[in-house]
Amino acid sequence: MIQDDAPRARHATLLSAAQFAARKHASQRRKGNSAEPYVNHLIEVARLLTELPATFDLNLVVAGFLHDTLEDTNATRTELVEHFGEDVTSLVEQVTDDKSLDRAVRKRLQIQNATLISARAQNLSTADKISNLRSTIADPPRGWTLERRREYFDWAKAVVDRFTGVDPMLKREFESVYSSFGPELDLQPQSLSAGSARV
Ligand code: ZN
Image 1: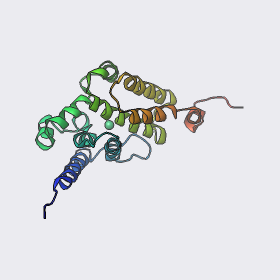
Image 2 (image 1 turned 180 degrees about the vertical axis):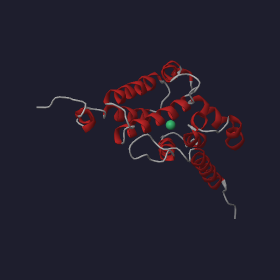
Image 3 (image 1 turned 90 degrees about the horizontal axis):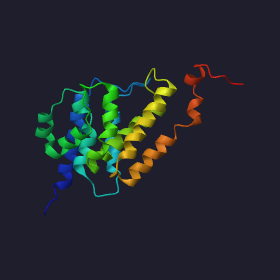
Image 4 (image 1 turned 45 degrees about the horizontal axis):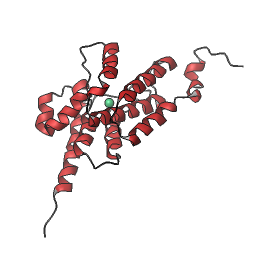
């Protein structure tokens, strides 16, 4: 009997990416009060990329797990190429900020360079931003004022609005999360204690 080993190989690749990311980010946590393990974010981004209606793009999902390794861990380009190949590494590089620049410059560059990255990398970046906006709503980074959260949302939208190759379903999900930053968030205790007068 002929056995198709392709699905097994794909599952193995996905799990080794998850394991690589989990190990590299092992000591990191999200910035919210519940300090979720960082790997939760990586799994969410990878999962969003499995939901694209186009043909399953294994390397893109693998890059979903790995997208923060070059920016936030000691992983190197050589390591990524060795384990996951050039295509995955290139996807990760396209969504990696240059940490030697200050935060404001990095953010401006993401807007400027939005049209220079591939459509697949645009999907990866959009999935990343969906996950980040969701957690900014559900469990805001400690110490972030309402204004800072608003700025973060608007910056993410400025980047995604410049993308020309994003999958429409992903774009709709982004718009939906973006627009959920509405008046109900203004009623959270954080903003009330900031002195808004309520009658
Ligand atoms: Zn990320």
